[in-house]
Length: 208
Image 1 (spheres, helix red, strand yellow):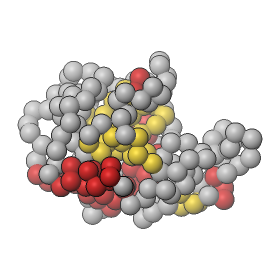
Image 2 (tube, helix red, strand yellow):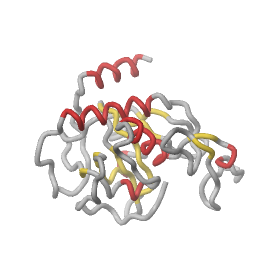
Image 3 (cartoon, helix red, strand yellow):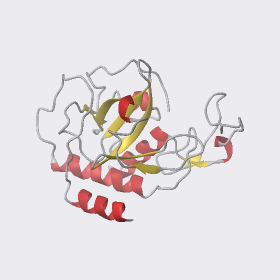
Image 4 (cartoon, one colour):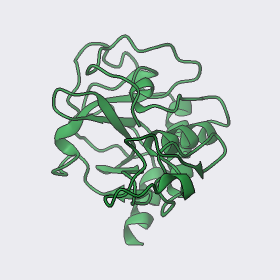
């Protein structure tokens, strides 16, 4: 509760926290973020935070909220091998950020339902002092494909839907987290009707 109160104050003043984002140095920000950009990001964060505790469902999430997931032969299963997704209403990682940005932008920004495809859109964030609440953080295994995305909250925190069997949650220090910190490969800021970013990211294919 104390964290959420602090986060609410943080978002109210649009505070920025310096963090390290390992990404290419090309296409650095050529102008300060506009008020509209900042407000869209804060709105997306507020939408996502309202979904805390919603179950993870592989393939779940639409532009209007959580949906029933599905199992695809590889994803959507619990460790015991049982299919959880086909009877779970919730979000997967890209479904959550897609929903948050669509609702937070009042329908102006529609992202695809794949983390790798999402990483190719919007403005690439390459400097540690560029991140704003609402920016998307993308993750991959070393030398592998982008397979996960979360929504940056500010203060080093991220909200995400992690994997089958979990719920939408806040990771308080993503950049120092032993699992996700080393896997951070890119960050972007969604934009209305954005063209694919010109910044190359790790070799990607449709993922979560």
